[in-house]
Length: 157
Image (cartoon, rainbow, N blue to C red; front, side, top):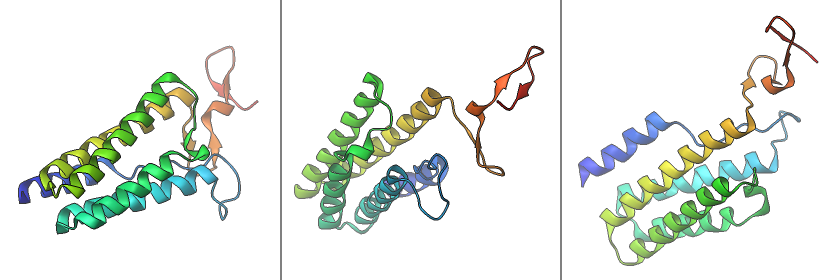
């Protein structure tokens, strides 16, 4: 079981945080979606803590919060069948987490957590690719705001 917990921790470190940056707006005032994603990250970390500590109440409580978060309107960032599939898979994984926590099945909960995390990673990748947008950290400009000129170089609109 120690090996499984270590594998989950290593996976999370490699996968990075599943929190997208908000698009534009005030730096001091994150978008509702970014705020929701921060809550999702907090509760995902709570699930991992519960798995690591064998705390089934912590797993179930945080998984319940993840389900609630995924039902909020701000959750939907693109309206496509693929995004809906990712959202449904996320909820199914969270529901299975609750079920396994109530059954005190740590191995099942750990596997559900990995599935939930993989769904996050795949969905965030999909959203980035679907939007075709990447953030330029220095200037806060969406690269989608640029259009090619005749010779193929990029210019500002």
